[in-house]
Image 1 (cartoon, one colour):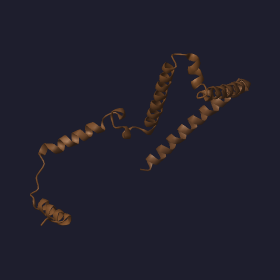
Image 2 (cartoon, helix red, strand yellow):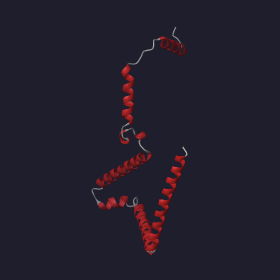
Image 3 (tube, rainbow, N blue to C red):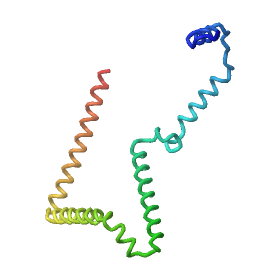
Length: 153
């Protein structure tokens, strides 16, 4: 008669429990710890993708998508027989937002340039001096607070 899966599981469990425990070699612990330390000391780009910083993972995905897009565009250009007119008509609508974005950035830059030129230089120097004094005051207050709290210990 064939034992049921539950009985078989119990028999295997008892057999494994009754076996004498084996000791690991003495050098195993040191080798394992050295391997873990070596893996942890690797730079982030040599570790697995899941261990990369989030910004690096996002940049990698965006760059990969961009390279895939460029590869597809190159294939379309080759299939069009290196005809620039067909290539331009195929991708002009997809990159219209780039022209719009550049126009917005240019107009915002022009606005800031006009605003900067309209501020008197004395005000700019005065503001710079004010912020420098505030930085020195903040540094001095921080040093005084640190010295006060360290003196109490």
